[in-house]
Length: 291
Image (cartoon, rainbow, N blue to C red; front, side):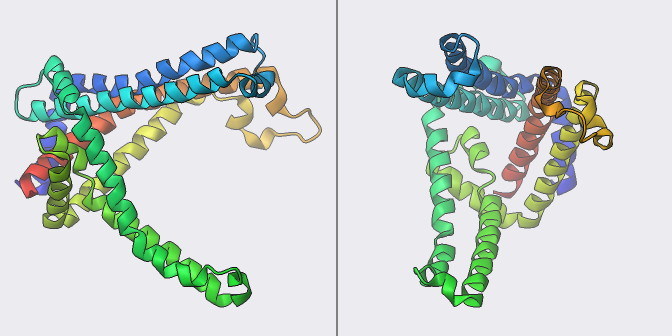
């Protein structure tokens, strides 16, 4: 199977299995719904006046704890549904898509998925160690007095870090998809490295294509939300410095909230039903071809 076949098959599988997008959508919605709980409590404690929110939070440790617990819970639930979505894509490729089956698999292998993500972060940090070791000799209390040497070392450090980070991300891009395809946490790292090594340029082309699709979806979401955009943002050249600041007016703030809600809702739908499924289908197919 050539790269063109991977892309064509990915689009075909996506069009015939649009319902897998529900998993990715629930991944976004679960985060919002769970985080609404502590914000609702805060709204009640403030009596609808968020200007005193800082004072209320500082005087209420239990409220701080609720935000922390809600964030952890929202993250875990979101990761679960995202993992289930990837597994659904694997099952769709095998011709045995099952919503319940994907959810059961994600629950059974959830710790493996979390473990793979932790290993992925550790590999990235270890890979960046040489770049940090390079900057240490120049990180003395008198570094700024060294002038050009410190500046040059800083620039080199940034360049090395960015290059290393991009390369290692390319080699780790298949990790979560390998776990969804039945590999353990450690095996998923090996599979991802082996796949990226065997199909390095194909992987880069796929990532560029998927990035372009993501950008187009982002632009489409902005286009959908454009009618809800505050008039001042639609035509900033109409700004008159003599008039009161439009950013402080209640009507502007309300319009801004409407615009953000429509934009985020549109972007979430597009990411859920277009970007994430396409990414999963294409990367899984390429992983199986090259690993």
